[in-house]
Amino acid sequence: MFRSAGMRFIIVGALALMMFIPLNLVSEIVQERSRYSDQTIADISREWGGAQLISGPLLVIPVTEEVTYKRKREAIDAVTGRSLRDDKNNLIYEHYEETVTEDRAPVYLYPERFEMDVATQTQTRARGVFEVPVFTADVGLDFNFDTEIASDVLSEKQTLIWSEAELRVLLNSNRALRGEAILETGTQGFDLEPIPASKGAGTGVFSRTSDPRKLGDFSLRLSMNGAQHFGVAAVGRTTKVTMNSDWPDPSFFGDFLPDARDVAADGFSATWTVPHLARSLPQVTRENPDGTARSQATMMVRYLTPNDFYQKAWRSARYGILFISLTFLTILLLDRGAKKPAHPVQYLMVGLAQSVFVLLMLAYAEQIGFGAAYLVAAGATIGLLTVFGATALKLGKKTGLLAGVLVTVYAVLYLILRSADFALLAGATLAFVALALTMWLTRNEEWQGPERTGGGRWFKRTSPAAPSVPAE
Image (cartoon, rainbow, N blue to C red; front, side, top):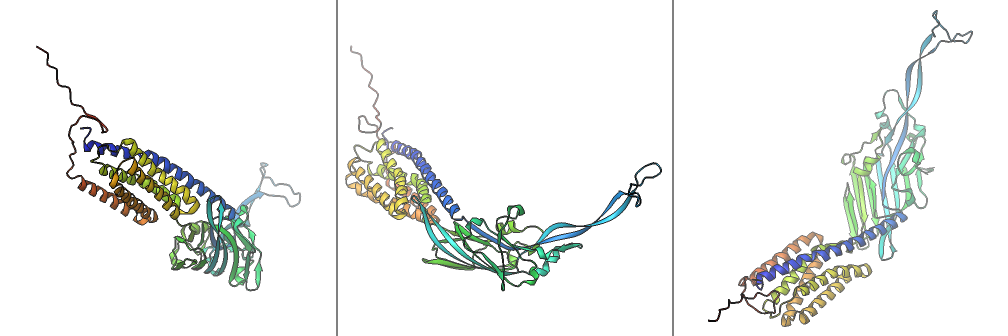
């Protein structure tokens, strides 16, 4: 029973399951390196300016209202200046009305036409073995306002204070700004200042525009640093954004994808056109709409570093149990008729070698890139296991079959790691083919096995001793 083929399959299966332990340890190491990489990227990105999202321009117009209150006060004798009292010596009060001017919630007005042209130039910053793409963006904004609709949200006695209107452009961080920021309309220029924290309006720049009804179209020119991603909110009744960059691997995301894009080895260009009805933003409102604009009306470009080998290494550890099991199964099938089959310890060494493959690949990938690192690690692992099969497992001529299976396994793993879209398809197909082939090759197997005595196997089963016959 213990020498049966069935029992050997069960034991090898248990050994394969044990490989979850080293694979999980390897996964933890991969994730630790990935977290360290993410922290380094975050640090460099923050120092360079960080991710950028521009929302605005937003015209903010203060509002006041004349309010009449009914009040009372002590009646004063005009001659003596003393308070008047009645016959019972009680104070006499007089009633009057007082009209005061009070501040009310301002009017927020988005532009009627909003056009943005962005050109970014990228470079790579390194810290240790980690590299981070960063960019410098030259941003041009052209826009105008329909100031006539500002009064649509006023009540009867409220008044717009046009002379105190200000223009705001919201940013993720003012630290990213570089060079001179220029705001002008026609021949008139405006001074820009950082939005103070006391306004509670967010981070960015603003300018007093006096009465914008007397002004024409505005233009704003900014230059800023950034990293990770760049985006803009569709704040115009008609919004058009054009972006050009020398980065060859963009990822477009956000609430609106580009209408047209052209991605090439030397960079990309993209164009967005967003009409008023496609966005959930009011053109004029009494509540600050910036939070909604930044969360529900964005057009974003992520500056990706292709071939994230940390993710690939983690996925190879997740798929590792499948490929270790296939290697165990191959060895088990190849030495079925051997006088001295592979020992459980030898299976464990084969599994550990394939677990170390993931660490080897990751260590080299940080230095020479994923493709070359995979070739080195896979070549070393296949070579080691092939030599082990020939010398330790005594597979003889069957060693070539083991090498062929290993080459196939690691070729399929490479395809899985290179394409996440086809990872499940490739893994499931490989598992099915391996199972079908095993079922076919073992169709005539004597799973119970003959009962034998003697050594040379993992377990021994000795026949019970015959009872002794007493001498007469």
